[in-house]
Length: 296
Image 1 (cartoon, rainbow, N blue to C red):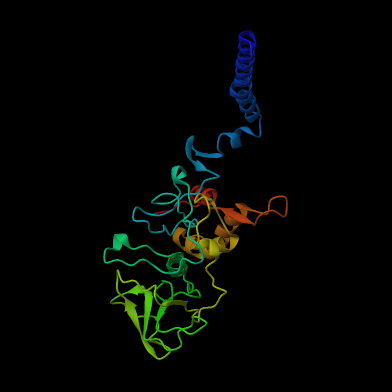
Image 2: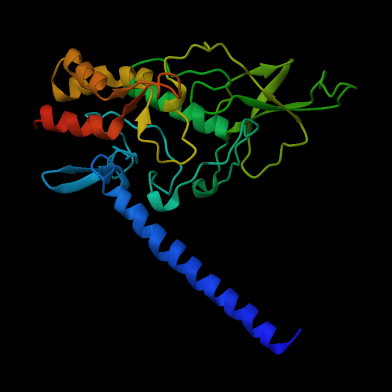
């Protein structure tokens, strides 16, 4: 290749680089910014921010926790769904899910409470009990103990060809740390033991116990599970309806007044068939404060 040809090719590449830099690095961003300023799009492009008395208090797209400094639910507010984004939830800089799946049913117990790691099952059981206690309904769920942990046994003993332990030598409630009293007294004629923190019971057959709780629990799924982003500002109408009585009592107003606000902040399926009906908790709670402020 001649030197002059090499020079021409490199100048052509440089010109292409400069042209594409101008188009993709300057023209395109400015065009997108200009389109975003069109009336009707400007608010969404700026983050769908919510302002009260000229002060930005949140976004319609990002949920918030309505709890006190100790993490306890404030009874005068509708509660959002759980969040795994950040240490206290709903942190836009740490958007994440728990990454736990249906096979996460055994807790990691430790003598140091800070080192205990709850399984997804126990997390859901605990949340369901908490919501049930707060809303005055039965928060019991299948595969959960009455104390709100996963009802799971490790059945230890010789196994048959199918993997079943027909004559266990030891049975441990793996999610109930000693000195707790196990949720079952016996299993297949063997006394059930509490779990000793730090002990490994994986050698046994892990058996979740369905229990006698109804599958039709009054505590809906979105009340006990986090969204994939951890930032979902919505809850289901069913979860909102469950909270109406508590919020009305805390604010000393009627349930019908609260229900009217819930209806006002309920959105249907997009285009009539996409997604599910939903209630924006952030906007609902702000509207509650404006129309029915809490009086001390």
